[in-house]
Length: 80
Image (cartoon, rainbow, N blue to C red; front, side, top):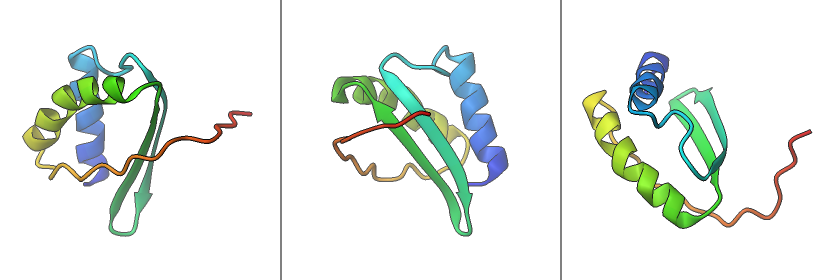
């Protein structure tokens, strides 16, 4: 994924009212040498599943191959 693709995905999600989806507590995106690293923290698995039904078609529309999500239980989030 390129920066332009990422930005368009975010714009498309915002247009669909999903820029700040229910249950997402935290979103982080950073460029890597070979693409992008994106990490979200969700309140519940069901929130992620609901968001994925909107996200996956948006990724495909923007020429992004949807990655296989890696899901981990969060032990702690420190915000400040």
